[in-house]
Each structure stands twice: as C-alpha cells, then as structure tokens.
Amino acid sequence: MNEATPLTLAALGGVISERSGVVNIALEGMMLMSAFTGYVAAFQTHNLWLGVLAGVLTGVVISALHAALSISLMVDQIVSGFVINILALGITGVFFKGFLQEASVAGPGVLPTWHIPLLSSIPVIGPILFVHQPITYAMLIAIVLVQFLLFRTVWGLRTRAVGEHPLAADTVGINVYRVRYLAVILSGGLAGLGGTYFSLQQIGQFLPNMTGGRGFIALAAMIFGKWKPLGAFYACLLFAGAEAFAGQIQIWGWHIPVVGWPIPFQFLGMLPYLLTIIVVAGAMGRAVAPAADGKPYRKA
Image (cartoon, rainbow, N blue to C red):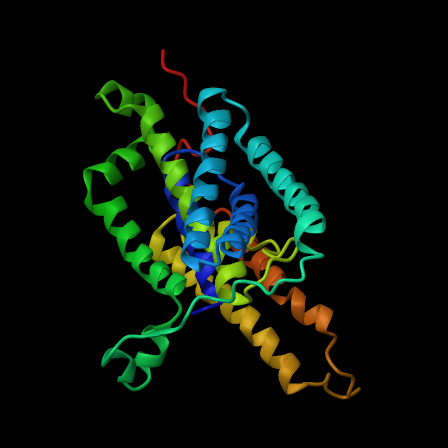
C-alpha cells in the first residue's frame, strides 16, 4: 500500500486532467518539484505539515503553468509537459547541489505512523488499511472522493462532457476553459501530495531525481485503469507489487537456477518499468481515452 501511494495520487491527478481533455505528462515534474520544495519548507521551518502544504502548493502552481500553456496559449500538451519535466529535473538538481548537498543539519524526519483505534486491531484488514502514515490515508480518501466527484456530481458530469465533446459542452453553457483549468490544477495538487511522499514520508530526505519515473508509471496505470479512479488504483497496486517483489528478491538473495548466479539488482530494478511497457502495450487498442483528450479547444 505504501509503494502504491505516490503512484495512485499521481494517477488520480492524471484521470481528472485527461477526463477534461488535457494530457498531463508533467506529473513526473510536478512530483519531483513538490518533493524538493516540500523538503526545503520542512527543513527550514522544522514543521513537516508545512512541508506537505508547500509540496501541494508547488504542484498547483506548476499545473497552473501547464494549464496556461496548453489551454490558453494552445501549446502542444505533450511539449508543455515534457518541458516542465526537464525544467523540474534541472532546477532540483542545481538547487540540491547548491544548498542541500553540503547541509550538515539533520533533516526534518518523516511523518508519523497513525494507528486508527480499534480498526487497526482487526485481523488481516487492520494492518493493511488502518496502520499508515498520513499521505497514505489521504490517498485512500482521495480514491473515494475522486470516484464520487467524477461520476456522481454535476462537476464530474461537466468535466467528462468537456473531455468528450467540448463544443457540445460549450453550446449548453459550460465554460470549457474554466472546467479544464480546474481539472488540471486539481491534478497538480494531487501530484504534489504524491511528490511529498518521497521526501517527507518515505525517507525524510531529498535526492536528485528521487521520483525515478513514477509519474510516467502513474500515467501507464491511468491508461490500464481505463481513465477511472478505481481502475487506476488497482493498476497502481500491480506496479507497486512488482516493485516490492523486486525488493524482496534482493533481500532473500535468490539465484538464477542451474548456473547459481545471484540475480543482478539492476535487472530487479527494471521489473516495474518492464511491467509498465508490457501493460501499456497490452492496453493499447483496448483502453479508449476521452474523445477530446489532448485536443485544444478554441471558442468560436
């Protein structure tokens, strides 16, 4: 469940954004920048919660930039997302070397683990669902919330309508630009929260490129989950399971049968990414994206 937390939050953000018709491959950059700013804010204020808030706000700001470029200025959405990813990688790398690498002060630590009273004592289910750190609980709440908002509210209906046929939505009085801006910004907030997982919940430190392509894996999970919150969550559990399994194999010290050589850790590290390629290749042609996904809209 812990390994699936950042993937699921980013995938939920991707679902919301692409349901409105905006491709958001900038999730990786948003997560990385949020991991960095969240850690710096917590480091400077000695307050982990302010760090989480800073990370979420960073995701919101960067997503607003992506929205402005792709919705108002009609820049190609793939290009806009790609530029943001490269920018995040460069900025965090430079500032890490300049300010954090030589810091001699201890980091802010990690978020506490919460045991939900009574519920955490339930056999099997209790430790799985009710013994976690705060961002994992937030992820579980976000799954339910996004599923409800997208498929049970007027806002969700309008968002899906804009993602399928923006001209028709505009004709009945829906503000296409406002709906898309809000969806992309919400997407950034969720990705930002997922980014803070790495630096404030997992290890209590920031490292260059510490998100390691999880934003792209989240996009694959979104596709595999057919642009649905619950489907994306199940796909994220699959990817996270592969990552956890690879880690366990290293701990157990498994060897290649017959020759007896230890399995190279580089190969084990590739497992989640190989699974991503296989899953995306298998999902292509079966998963149907929103009809207007990636298509800019200009009001006549």
